[in-house]
Image 1 (spheres, rainbow, N blue to C red):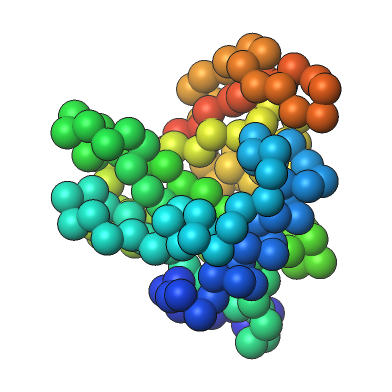
Image 2 (cartoon, one colour):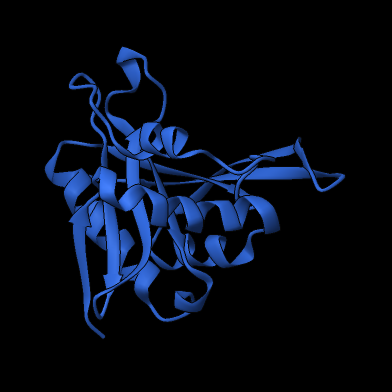
Length: 166
């Protein structure tokens, strides 16, 4: 399996928008109701705030865009600068192939090298595949918020996972 990464740039946004908006329309992996515009996706994935550490990467599998991964501030407050939230989205046809595991490991290395102390992931409680991915990669459940979101007419839980770097 050949996986490569490249920093997200404006040319990638329409493809990444398509990936994300499929999740918006069909799943509880995101709590957005409406598809995101190119401008909203750019704001989500192209960072220009030098005060807060953020990176986004296109994931390619054998040359094709398989998805994207990024880490961004957990919260934009000074005390949280040591923590980042990591997020990963793959096209459906690329799930279950180990791509997510490799992408997450790459982001962990980048975050650690950049001085991040804690990586967090915020996941819908019914998103079993994402929960399994983060547990497999050594993340520990640190929070369970009950009935905090509503999508498709159902109340949804959110779980948080974290990995602390020594």
